[in-house]
Image (cartoon, rainbow, N blue to C red; front, top):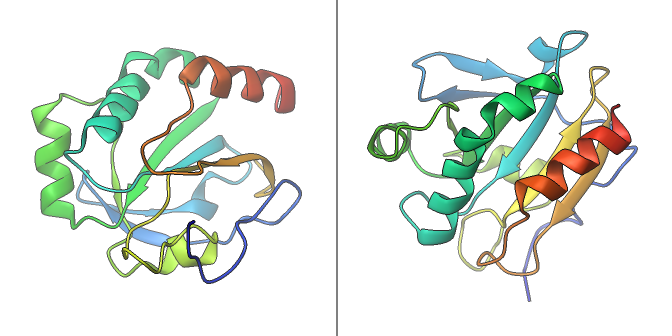
Length: 159
């Protein structure tokens, strides 16, 4: 059983704003997308693990499909930026990766695992107004949603 500090946020909740470091060398602030783009905030447990590698390479493979839905994919883990940069470069990912090294964002979204110190795998689709429109938290870190399911949710919820 996952041990978190609070229940994960669900549809209809306002998405907590954050500013974190990214592999681009620039900080990323969620509210900077307001009025411009929808955001898929995708928490993943740790870089260089098999399921995370498959998931993040899949985001790159379907980069154009997410872009066509006006969705910015923001994958985030508790890894430090240098580790995330190496992970991204090794797999030639198109998406920038975000570092929640202080674990504040994972805690705010209710997906920080107290037992391990990393986030559970979770997805939050945030609209242009900063409202969560769809979310899914995996039962175990070894599970992940397929992009087809996420893209269907985007189409059904955002349009």
